[in-house]
Image (cartoon, rainbow over all chains, first blue to last red):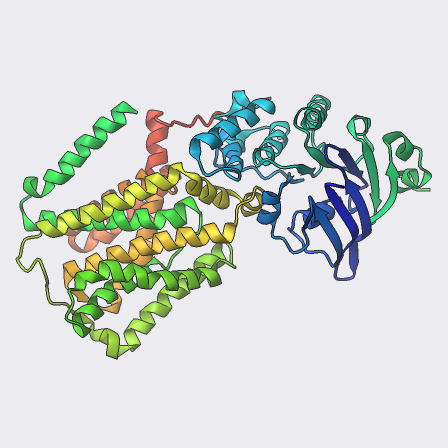
Length: 238
Length: 316
């Protein structure tokens, strides 16, 4: 039984096929990376799974539910969290309030929501910035806040769109560590979209899927994928 | 927290005693107007300030409330005060229909659509003469408080304003308030964390429009005359929005402060400067907008560092 099962997923924008007959699965507690060059269709896949786009064709099954046709907020309540490639903090709210809003997905009770938010802010190591406005945060913190806000909704699966973009080496190391703890300490599955073949991301991934022009060109363990000639060609050309 | 409670008690005592401190009928009239606009600004703020949906059509809801009183007075033998209950009931389906249509639009397009809603209502009132009396309007016979005292009206509008503010305060601290603020900040983010943005925007509109209709029903019972240029003009919608913006969008005390400042100053200026009053009113607006871009509340917070939320910038 897979947590997420994507079958024959296709999305056309006019004449452009952004995602082409893509099938893959994610098991509970598994961390999967989707890698591929800019424009490979990673963000489109995330938007399709979370209901921001409707697929042209294909099936998305999550935890026994059919996600095709489900509105983004319904999908989120089913247990699919997401972060955005271009981070979208709730700027006028503090870091704690950002997380608190997420926690209200689980409860209408204020003190219970605060308790959840407190737990998440500690888990993501953002406690010191709780009162700071989200607007003023540096990029690394904003990325972490995206993840924290999503985590507060109590997801079973988190889709992380371009987790590593814009981060300096220290920040990427922290981000990777957080994703690892997500799986090891909370048992939450993650699908991380990553533009570059980065050793750091590969190292924590149970499986890597490689996209190019909307098609899956390779799948396997990090070491299998790195040696695949199609993958090398996609990134470096012939 | 304790100090806030003391201030609030003193303010309440003052407001309850106010009609006896200001015995002149004109002063009482100004107090009633200020409180009416406090209620209007606060009601608008639920949709415009918390949820960030800048409506310039709230005169429509105000007008429906006022006309409900007028129609009850002219077509039935009931007291027009029933409009305080009937107005919001009537406004609710209209607001939901308006929301269903207008919430498909975002930002300035939403605002334009709400202007259209206000104008449609004004034209309906102008042309549906059988019901509304058209351009002539409706004179309402006074009921219940048939004497000349303004004191009962003062307490009624004080109650309306207090209930509206209490609702705003309650909303701002609860799930609903946080969800509305999330929608204001970023609708996609809001959806991504499980917020049904359409539903919550409709809830905000329903509450805001109903409270505005109650204020409209009160207005008709107080002034005893209703016509389209008085209760349904675009200028009224604009005035409500200005109060919330000047006071501080999305804060509970903001619209209260804005209404007090703008309504008091416009009355004072009208008496002191006759025709020049709008000039001075305009100058005041420009000054506040230039120097206090987050409204009076934001300006005061910065001046006195009263802010509960530290907006410290973080350097990493």
